[in-house]
Image (cartoon, rainbow, N blue to C red; front, top):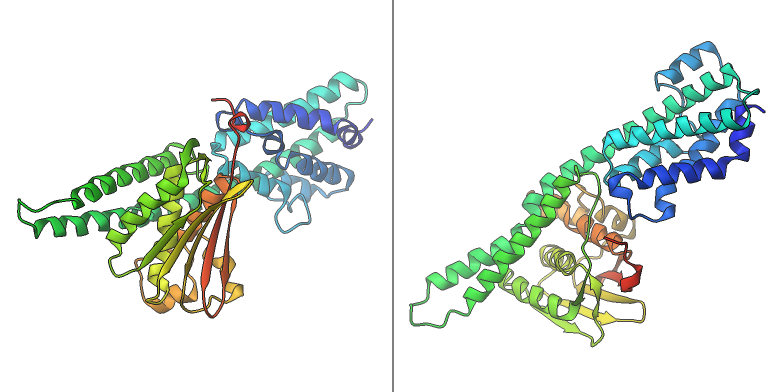
Length: 375
């Protein structure tokens, strides 16, 4: 039996073994089976297709150097997408390459065990060339993704500390104008803002520890988002004295969430509304549903064209409203971070804009305690 046919017949066994190996890699230890398998089945399909097609000696040499054509006809090959996803999962490049090394060894070992007479040197050479090409494609996209996240990290450092820092500075100015005998309730705001900054720094250090390759990581705890969001709104009112922020919360807003991350998302949404909306009120509402909690931030102002909405959530990109504002210190990270927080919670963020109102909706699914991975 030729190797291409053998891989087709035993693909499930090969993929299962690859997934078991992936689980031994630290960042993937508690991931779902779907995440562990990722695009490995598609990579095998592309390798089989490659083995079944003839090639010239020049094509063979190019593939051995990782310079061949992509292993699939799609815009991004399975190997390229695999590299990008593994970067977002927090793997190191050496771990990514080790996955392919394990896949190569697993296939050849299984083939030799089950078809000892049928092993073809030509097939082994072709298979190794295809694996080398897949490694090259994955590593290229892995590197691009980590470079992008490194830029995001540097931008986040300046972006996310700006709001709490403004609150601290403003409160310090108010305190300096008071006499020693006057009540100083603003001191509480000062302390809470400092603690908020420390929490944000912890998040940024988490990016750094994961080699800037894992996206947003969250730590779920049972929390009342109504109370957390109310506290964040108070900080935002201190930091944005010219903005009128209305807040309302429903009764059922408790669940397993990362309160610090949700507050970060709320702060980004309100700051975005204050920066690009008009002088009208900013409405913040939090409601609890059967399966999720929904956070909405709405403001009046210029309508956002539907074609520009997807661009708002991309890192280091700015919409036309941002360009028109002339605010060159804004790196276009706020809404990207909101989206990352939503995705990390298994939710999503949406934008609905009309001539009257622009609303951002952050949907956060509830998670049961027994649904969380083991520590």
